[in-house]
Image (spheres, rainbow, N blue to C red):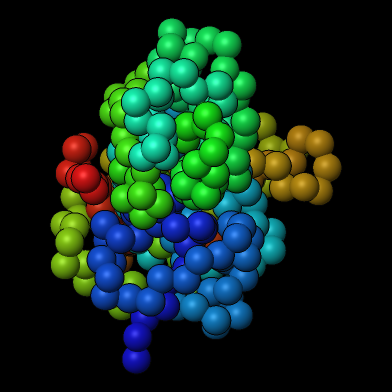
Length: 294
């Protein structure tokens, strides 16, 4: 049976790019309009996996993803894909000779912010309009050749919608990356990528501290420290039950074992914390410059 993988559409978004880099065309790729709808589709059994963004190096965490997973439809993280964010300036083929006369730039708000220096230098007086995604912006430019409009998007978008890249890599920061989580109803990813090799192992926990207990966060961190478990991320999110109530998302740089992580969890629970496993999985990285869609 064909594996069905849902992602935030339309075609040629950065999420779609991550899906193609990991799964290739070996799966049925299902376009979905929003992150919550992606998560719902997995929970309801309409698709097997969903690939959703969780964090960007410049913009920070994608709070909607974790909040929906925690508060609405719990699923497991069974894999992670880290992709470089390479933004290009593209126009309709009929506008290649006059691309410097563009009066309107269309893209996702984050993409426009990430290309501030280039836009400020080249298109200071242009109008910047926000699309729901970089892929949607590329699609719009493709369908409106009569307009002096350009899109900021990735190379896959240029290929998918028949646009011409007139300036490559216009982003301000060349170390920008986005993490994408592969979500599933069980704890296991029943798929072996033929295209990417795992370069890291991770376990993600949700920890809720006991109320009105001084030094609780210090005790939580100590449970990992003396076991020499390296934490690559700890982030607080509101419980949505009142001001001052938070849970913590904690990333540990190793797979769930039989001793260290279970021991840390048992110690946290003995302290009165609530602990939930969000996933133990392998992380894959797409190499900078490896996605050439010319």
